[in-house]
Length: 460
Image 1 (tube, one colour):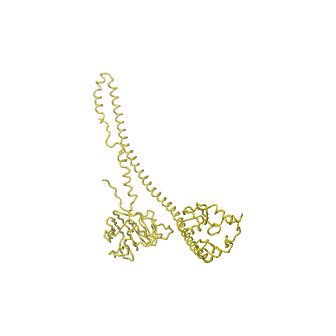
Image 2: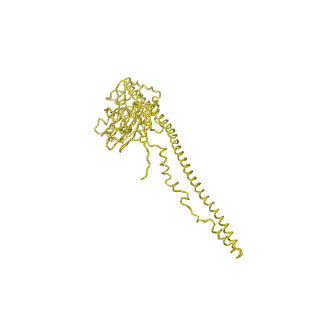
Image 3: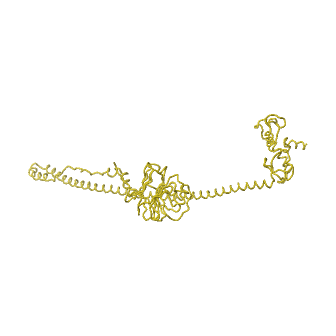
């Protein structure tokens, strides 16, 4: 009975225990590879036993039979060695290239592996191990790369915290200055209001005191006259001349009047209050047309708190973010210009080596900047104008203290001038394409500063 049950677990094609059995609509089961090999040799997909025509999609996995075969094999050889064929019990010596599995010599001669190609087991193992080692090496390299990026991400996260803390401190300091200015301005304006109130109150007090004194004198004259009028007719007639003289000699009184400007000038204190304060505030604030971007600065550069001054210093550990320029002591402006006209002045006084100009937004910041950089430089005591790829023109100027950059993207040009004499130095024309950033290079510890503009407040 057991022998009959074991025969039912054999594939009718290869006559070996089913491997990945599939079942056809006719209820016959075969190894998946055996059925595919059988159909590959036939024009019509027929059942190898009953010749019933089937579709490729009709071959469904026979899960129950697969589990039964696996159970049978595990019970048949519970302690089978890994290097022994679980079907024939022979030592595995070959590797079937079609089925990609180790086989014994009996497997090689069976119908299941008919016309298949084989390799010695050790050769196949060596080849597969080599492939796996290469794949493993690639994974290990990938892991190293991931570890490096993990460290960079951690460094970036920590730098973000540092940036947030420092920026927050500077924001608070900036608002403290503004608050102090507003508080002082508030005190001054309240003091002016109080002074006007005291002055006009004194005037009104003097007027009221004078009026009170006049009223007392007038009241005394009135009372005396009324008493004399109540006397007898003879007495009135005898004192008439005296009474008339007293009344006539009473100091003449004009009607009390409020002179113009007696009230508080509210319009002076409140009119355009915000605008007037803002006008005065221009002396407390500055506007710089180009603000430097610390996220683009080379690790050797140090920027001022207001991001308008840069100098060369000790190299710092900074994140290698995509915006940062590496390999050059350079920094870019925070804003890319894509249209219109723009101008800024840079103080280059006491600098022995510098460059300034514009860099195309599309330029590679990690390798070669020259392909998108238009600049004027001082090197070895000579001033030069340099354009891509590295075309240079010697400038007929000996010393510069301030340089003005005039960028006209409508004309695709950038011009350089001596900001003190307005002498034209050089112009690159019809060269710029796309958006550009202001560019600065310095190798000096002397601060390299972008100068603020003069602020004018006027009304039309």
